[in-house]
Image 1: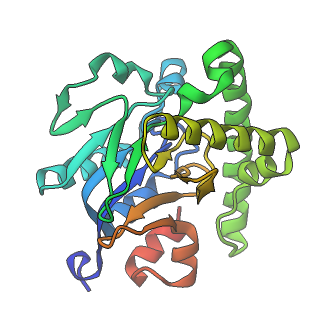
Image 2 (image 1 turned 90 degrees about the vertical axis):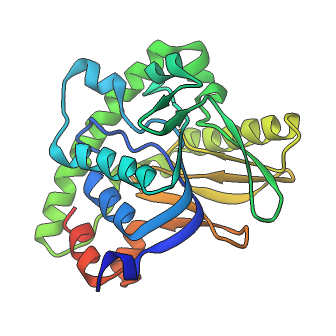
Image 3 (image 1 turned 180 degrees about the vertical axis):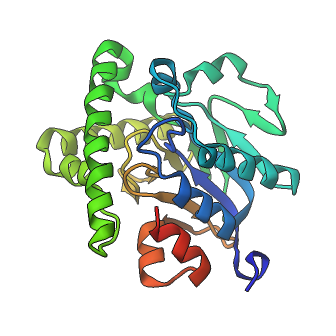
Length: 267
């Protein structure tokens, strides 16, 4: 069965927090996802490349280059590609309003759904108090996070050898820490308040690596998640409804073609 016959087509796809350039990036799973999913518009909602890590040590395997080439190829085939930089790829904020190989770079954008609802699309780091007022602490936290991801990588090597599926230690730990859960709640409220201030009905963001699709004080709050811990993206269907796609779960349940499933589970 060919990719063309099995791919899903959406009105829009929203992807964030890929962190290309890091060892924790699940580039093989994302590449598999991109092979099986297309859209009229693809929003790259920040932290696609990790400039913080690349400055300290260069890590860019062929798979990471393959992801970039796959996205650019979708643009050449007619998809509109919009890149909204985050804090880890903030160097691109020097190029707002420009185009690179057909990719539009903008700080934020308003997306109008098929149902007529308007959504603010933004990475979200602008509403993270630590990023705004104590960037040194964010860098320190990043180092600790990378250490946790290193443990996570080796843990999943062992799990694969035992025939078990991918599981994120860092994501599990995050949700077990009371302060982290409280931070997520405050972040959601801050983004929803900004959406209300801008007169839109919803917000689509990334940054905190925690996928969500829910109502927050009357605002439709959507978080795309990430491709380090949870391997999630958000899709808008042609009827204007939204869906959080949890790619690991789909590959485990057989919701994707067998050929693609083999690639994903091998990640």
